[in-house]
Length: 266
Ligand SMILES: NC(=O)c1ccc[n+]([C@@H]2O[C@H](COP(=O)([O-])OP(=O)(O)OC[C@H]3O[C@@H](n4cnc5c(N)ncnc54)[C@H](OP(=O)(O)O)[C@@H]3O)[C@@H](O)[C@H]2O)c1
Image 1 (tube, rainbow, N blue to C red):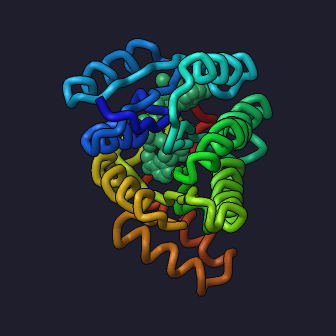
Image 2 (cartoon, rainbow, N blue to C red):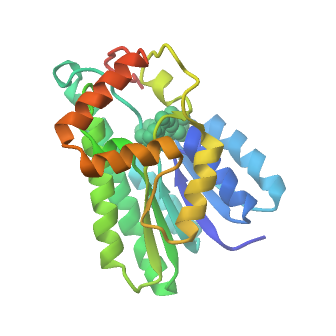
């Protein structure tokens, strides 16, 4: 059994599940975290025949109790964690005035607070072993204003900025930080956020995104943008005024037929 462990949050579906599969294929054992216990168990059963170990922790990472449960299980298991993938997230798609403050707080707690806490928990061990990877799943929306997704886009911009600064602080420590910035990816993400689109065949598969993400992470790349369309979007963001890019994003999302919705109801 390999003794190289990775923690993947949001590993019960989508990009997180695909990243766990990609890591297991590379002989990493994994800690799978999410709320859906049965989905986590199914994912673990899919990975262990590859000769790796899979530990599941069912926890709501947007709550203090959920984070405490994860801390306790990790402390008990004493695993040599060499990679942390902060991936769990959900969408809210509606004008800012129409989204509930409680949902926004849950989004911030999940995407930012949990990321910060888990990273702080894993870094000492990585530093001591002079080896480790932190992969934060942001989005191309980290680069642009996104009408109807104000808090989501701001969270992703935070994740990108935090990753860049932490990478500098860890320079020379043997621990690298990578921000993954996917665009539209074929997962349950939009359906769970109640977003409806006219054309649903857009975007890369979760497996493609995961392959590119894990390769970039293991190479210690600071920012990974999967796919040429997303790379073009990020290049435009470097040159276009933010307002113009935001207007383009709004036009593009309308063309896709995305209709406003107040977001996932847990
Ligand atoms: N799909 C896209 O187009 C796209 C584009 C750019 C960025 N992203 C980012 O990619 C990441 C993964 O999204 P996805 O597309 O793979 O969507 P997904 O299939 O809906 O997966 C989201 C994952 O997050 C977990 N999660 C949600 N709320 C949680 C909570 N409170 N506590 C613990 N786990 C929670 C879910 O697990 P449970 O339901 O079991 O809790 C699930 O495993 C997100 O951060 C998203 O912002 C997605």
